[in-house]
Image (tube, rainbow, N blue to C red):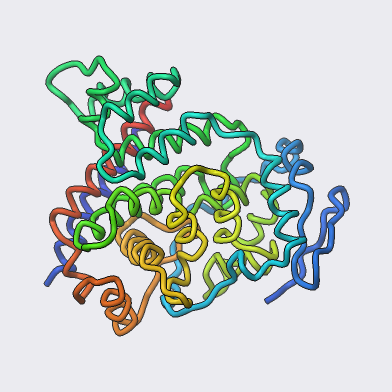
Length: 376
């Protein structure tokens, strides 16, 4: 725990320094004989997810290459990656059926996240939802009274905790707690669940920061989309642990993004899984669409929210909050400037890497350290 806290604090220091400085297809995967594959068209292969859910003991791999280092990968917002629209009805329904096998998230998640996505939602409205879930309420109070925040007075009400910690922190806590209570989401070889939460929290904070500089994008909507943008990776880790390990291993060897290796191995990617997982939630459709297109925002028709998530993902991955495959993206400046203009933002990107953003990400880092301490 001490080591994690040290690393987290060091990350925050490096992050602030970095921001200030920046201102001046397909290989066949052998099928598991115990999980017979169902062929869906020429390219899509899906196994019954429940077969992998019940065999965790057998599938626990050695966590042996977390520190394999980072790999730089060329990226572009102009790239095109498969979205849910490419799926025929039969494979789409099969994917939905597989996702439906996952244990249901707690009700607080389905109620709080839509509320937190609304413009101008207040602490009273959020507290009213959270206080009905004892687990989240208790964690929120423990978090607000932790040494990392150091509030002068003891926080003894959910409303006060929400008001002091802010929507971003509450949003992250609710989602992380909801998935942890499923009992089926575990680290796999090459990827810790904690890494995904760290990255998602940073992308959420950056998306909100960028939205504040835009006229026609609500910051709460941007923050929620940022937090949920990689939820498809979590679902793929639950439904296909061994296949996700294979996709991650390929990232270590080739100059391709994880999303490309996912499609080679799964016949789908985390954009598709995330889109289908979110569709049952009472969340604005704009958020679902952005999640399903966050790697290809310039695909017609242009999606502004997806573009903001792409930019936020890019900044976060280069600022110390590694993307799930520990890949550091490099984009052409011309592409970056074009995307900024499409979003209604003035180039260059460094214009938005400000001290204000550094403070927001430092707050985000404080939340991550505090939640890690509470988990021990």
